[in-house]
Length: 400
Image (cartoon, rainbow, N blue to C red; front, side):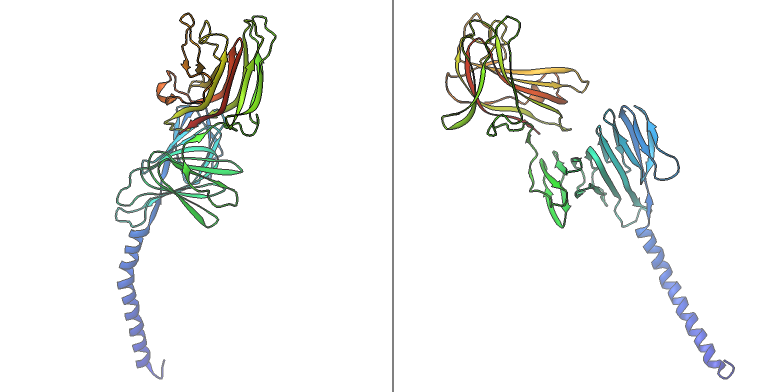
């Protein structure tokens, strides 16, 4: 430095100028980048709808109970648990919402939005569904729509704006459904399936998503009765009039169609019911738009005309037991007969040709029942009356 001070001076001058240029250019660029990409952490609002839920903050205080009708703000990282007797709703900053049904646990992993109005990053909501069932309604997309995603043990779902979705998960599999609007991209083990409105897919652990299928489903096991009576319980109910002659249930092949035959002879005017019953105990989807019973039936013989003296003894009947949202029990009944008599009522009955296969489809029970079903408890297919002979080859309880 002492031998060549001029060179040192120029070096200092050049370095100072370079530093000035970095500050002059990099400073505004850094500020611009910060304004464009800086994020802030949002909060969500959780409210208990039924029973008491448990809220577990990410730091600080331990788990807190939240009673029915109470609400609180929660931050990202919070875990919310609804036991088998409670439900909750969560509202997000972009006006999306999520409903937690009984037995559900969810973690609010990421709740972010741009810090500044001119920010370029999209708002982000990322959830982990650990167990149970949720219904999601994503908000309308603005200039920068929210990136809404839900992760389960089995798959990742990217959800479109302005959509309605239902997700169910347990240890074995997850099921993703797009209800009446929206799109979802379901990915697992490197493969992706796109769901359109009113479609669904299932994902098992370690497997790719199954092909998308219609959202409608049959709630019954072995509804076509091709696997014997698997999933069904059979019995006779003699009532209280002293009868002791049971009916029989037999698998047959009728006109090339596998079927179950109900038969009773020798009743001599005594009442009996010969029953196939399947326990369901399933909560219907929310929202549910359609619940329909479909069956293929045949009535060969009935000794008691119409539906009997109380319109309750048809040679073939379908009875669906359900409960409403307040846990009150009710039933839907449909009977089939061919022999009419003016003195015997046929309320809840449908007259069919004798000894001929008939396709039956009920109206949409969601729209026609006086009490809207919330949970289906059981379904029974049975023959009732004195002597009877009738068949059923399939029965379906289709929900959408």
